[in-house]
Image 1 (cartoon, helix red, strand yellow):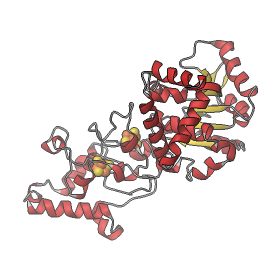
Image 2 (cartoon, helix red, strand yellow):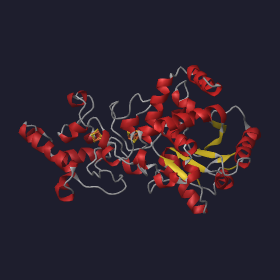
Image 3 (cartoon, rainbow, N blue to C red):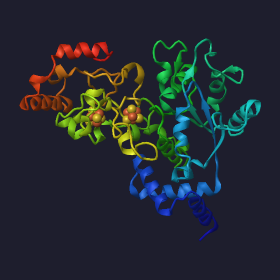
Image 4 (cartoon, rainbow, N blue to C red):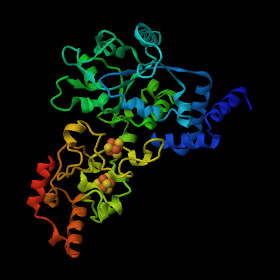
Length: 391
Ligand code: SF4
Ligand code: SF4
């Protein structure tokens, strides 16, 4: 075994990771990036050689954030295979967890970018706070916007992690007195053309960051510019954000059968029925959460019993709240900001699966005699309105 191979094998062993786990992990990264199985050895070898020889300079900058994305990343930092990839980043500045403070910390941030001009990666968490001439958020005695103004033009790319960095997220929710916005919107205003890769959801899924590190750095897609062709109109990797939650949801069969949960704690909930009537935004939300899952692939929102609240959508707070309010408008796959249709006029609006499912549901309710026991529609609407629902 070559020295490098042995060193890498030791790295894996130190994390309790077998070679088999590592290859399996590379397979899941390939799947996430839409690469064929034949690319798995290429990914494995790229990670292996980078782990032995090269560190990529990176900085993690926080705007207006709750640090939830940092916490989400921390879930990937106990010894496991993802850390093998993340260790190739020389993360020289990450204010939430770094030891350095004050002027030393700020020097590390500026030195990392200035000494690696055009090469360093910036990961940006949180919203860009423009309010009060940028004084809505101050870092190191200056408006936090200065960090983006000074350094965004000099980094190779920015990975905007979490909905706040993508479009302002919950920080931007009305009335948005702090004038919060997303990184790409701010850079566009300033005429800064640095590529931005948007990874929404609240918080970000660390698996996506790992996949982007492999794609952008190890497979050279940033250098070649190929990554730009893989982003959708919202700057999100199409392969991660190209399908709806609903497309891959394990409760989808219940949706098709018109089997819905109407109340938590009910027998329908115990049976794992569809959560659409509890406000699930899965039909409008495009992420691969059901496939990649969360917390080291343990589970995800709908699997753990909660409706998807659509945190992968643009303006998800303003468009999705109240999160458990019954949604009467459904727009499959188009994002909740792009209109929708009321189930009552579903047949006229679309001939698609939602209309079919709601039709089946009505037929099923009638056939089993449950229709007669339903409260009057207007009473239900009034109830929803009082709760702030009926969107
Ligand atoms: S509405 Fe929600 S719970 Fe129901 S099938 Fe779609 S994603 Fe799953
Ligand atoms: S399932 Fe929905 S609410 Fe949960 S993380 Fe994914 S997009 Fe967000």
